[in-house]
Length: 114
Image (cartoon, rainbow, N blue to C red; front, side, top):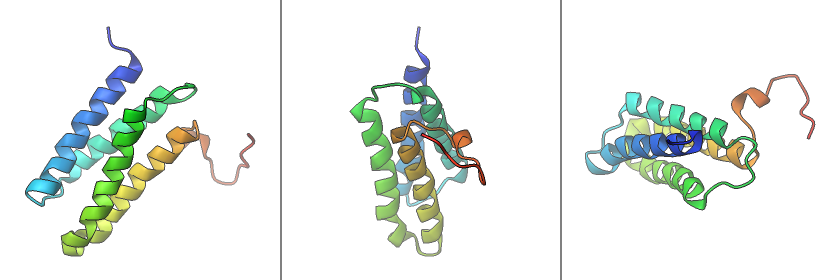
């Protein structure tokens, strides 16, 4: 039986390939695939919240995803900003995982106490 972490990792990797593949091969941005990718990244955040160890390959996948998006952005003309924004969302997920947080932990107007 798979754990939440294993399911989240599998879902992220599948979504990553489904989204990044067309960008690099046929130069197409599939918005619905990005939504799946972002949802999978959020699932990763929740799965790893409170965990002491995070596999390096998971962090590498997130890092590679936003790195590829930023590297490809200049070649997408009018969609450059869209790819940059998508990269920023994945980078935010990466940062939250490293900070042991989820999006709900950050609430506007409420100081964060560590």
